[in-house]
Amino acid sequence: MPYSTHLYLLLTTLPLAPRPAAGDHARQAGPDLADLVTPDLQRLWDLVADFRCRPLCPAAAQQFERQLQEALRQLGRGIVQHTYNHLEPAAVADLAKHVRFEAALYTRLNAKTPQNVWTLFGPIRLRRVGYRPTDQDGEPTLFPLTAALGLVHGASPALAERAARLLASTGMTQQQTLARLRQDQGVAWGVKKLRQVTAAVAQALIGQRHEVQVQQVLAWLGQASAGTGRHKPVLSVGRDGITLGVRVKRGAVFEVATTATVSVLDRRGKRLGTVYLAYAPEPYQGTMSRELTRLLEDVLRRWAGPLPRLCYVTDAGDNETTYYDVVLSRMKHPRSQEALAWLRVVDYYHASTRVWTLAELLFGKGTRAAGWARKMQKWLLKPGGVNRVLHSAAALREQYRLQGKKRSAFGKAYRYLRERMKYMNYAAYRAWGVPLGSGVTEAACKTVYTQRLKLSGMRWQKVGAQTILNLRVLLLSGVWEAAYARVLGACDEARVGDQAACYDSEAEKAA
Image (cartoon, rainbow, N blue to C red):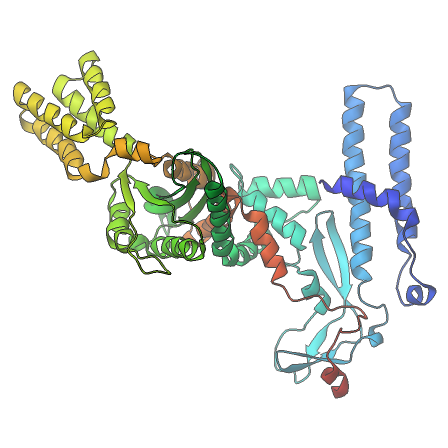
């Protein structure tokens, strides 16, 4: 629901809202909230009256909506500022003189200090009570209200989440994100502030990524198991690499970043959803292997239903093959310790490209090559299809007496198929409801990387790239809201104002 709708609902109920008791009002500084918003409310009524008196036309409607949006934002800014500034008593002396934090004693300052805070409605001025270390050991001053509100480098949790989501969105850049924040929230940040806020949000979110992704995959497995169809539910895993421009001292180099996918297919072979992992270039891709393994093991450990069919669908790249040989082929069930039977599937598209290579080396480019290649592609999908393709190709190689570079290139494509025959049993895979291609993972390279990190002229520091990737995998996995809710829920309960449990009794005794 947009904030203008929330404000409209607030305005309709504001006259009915109970006012503070007389004693409470005396303890607050500044005007009453109802009195504060009266000028802004009047402006809204004036805008409506002015619009209704004008000749109706598209230009007038556009101007009215823009002015109304700005007026609503101004109203919201005033309400937020008033509300936040009245969470603590106006009289500083009403708060505890001393408090304890992490076994250290802090002494209250005698006056509130101001802080610039940015919210969804724009910047506000927050006045809050601080506590300085009693023994003056150099520790920073504590501001309980700031901590209770969950400010992120001066940004409210709502605005910080908005900024991070924008920056992680497809096609966005830093400048586009800053422009959107100015337009929609009236927040005039610079690049440095944007990076501070989004890096902090990414750091908090990535700590929740594993758990929310595990829960999401388990939910899909439950949905798949409860469905109908002739296949077992399938847990399909893939990983792939993509080159990424990395900034160095005197230019840029291109290194291989990595992405992985974990998908669940139901009993009809329909993909219910996919969660993503992505990591900036790293030697041997160790972080990806560890995190992907941890995700799979936790899903299997916590899944209480019948074991789904497990498959690993990738091309035959070195890192992808090594992960299967070293990890998946040796993986045991986390609870029973029984060996797991992972189906290794070499992507049908990559196998088909080798068939086309053989065809063009045999016949040259043209209709004969295309006809033979299409026929072989159909054979690949039949029982024993790879054998038939290889026999046909070998016979034609001898018939046409390929020599030199053509024979060498032919041998390379031929060996690709022959050495991976056991992973190309496509007829059986189709019968079992297992995907034949790594399209989801190939698409992940585009959606995770190309649409955000490989826009025109982009080059990245690895730390900056990983910040965006940490945000982007949550967004694309559909678990952003769950992860951010966990981040907010992990914060300590706010204890501000004159709540009964505001400060611990031992600190009161120390005063």
